[in-house]
Image 1 (tube, helix red, strand yellow):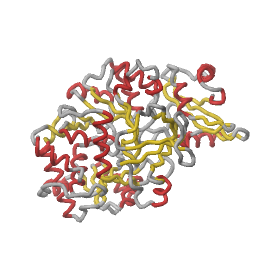
Image 2: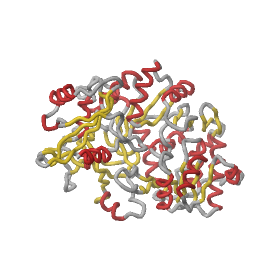
Image 3: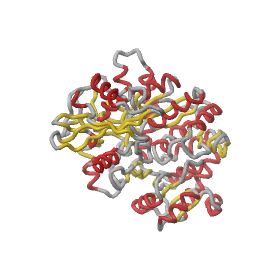
Image 4: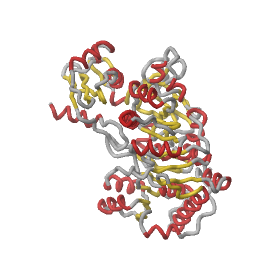
Length: 506
């Protein structure tokens, strides 16, 4: 089934329901949403970019983003979302690799692509040229697609090299959306999705559940993440649902406390995309209340591996609530999750191994990269590269990426465990722990620390905190103060950059 069928059904049932907002202004009801998406679809078909054709989207969070996305799907084409924060040359590489002949973009990003050079045809949705699309007679209904036809070609963030194109099918998106209702949260017609995180990433596929029920979709005027704007829009619309990386949650908590606002109107904040430290989520729940839930997924299994419910995030009565809060929840309904050893054999409860997943939400492979597909998909299992453990109740605790694990003197150190301990200190704002080459031990442990404003790096206090809470061999041998941690466009800490700094230090 074509995923755009959900828009078609909602528009048929509730055509006059408000759908797309630019700030506080409604720019389309569901009838207009469907019509404009149908125009994009019909225009694409006329250009020869219909069923199975990759079509790129390189634009900031605008209402037209969703119109274009559903237009691509209605045509049976394959959406290739590109993070608007990428450099023009990076975007041009993705366009070339995906073999996309058409790119929908906004004016600013069109200029960056022109500077980078691309053979693809650019369609600027903010220019007069877009009128040719807006004047096209719309496609009446979505093109028929099989479950395993491609819907989305998602390029991984590529922190260690060129990104790979993850092939995402209509079946995968449908599985992800239905599991959300079962395993994570409900969405009602009176709810509103606020897109403060890039629509090219997790926030972009979370629109599907809101389209299914006829909820509202809000693109901030800023086109991105601005704490004050988020609080204002939430208060205006009410029942707001948003996707946020853990760093965004932390920033929202700090900003709300500074401004004296309580986040009125925020209904659900889904955090995902990186490690959420217990100290940060405890503080956020204490301030905002029971609005948080967690999803764990990868581009290779989009938002679909496990979920930690609103209850589990908020509960403080269970004897092991801290361990559960530090987990990424339990397996979602459409997948199996297993913790495997180096040989791929399932490990006993509590032992640390690689998190392995199989089911309807898992990708069929990487775009034209058989070698990488063979390494990542083994005997039907997705090898996530994440190290974790599972308890007897099925809660999965992620320890670290396998490549980030530190082996010192033959013992394993998971950086997140050390980071969690250091973040319990009130003056520690952020921390990232990495391994450093050592002639005797193989590696030793090093911490990069961002201190709170006005606080100085106190080596004795950091050392004492570690010695009181974790084994001595896990204690960092050196601490380095930074004004900020290096991060990629999705807010993930670039540990490769930190390791490079250590090498440069000698």
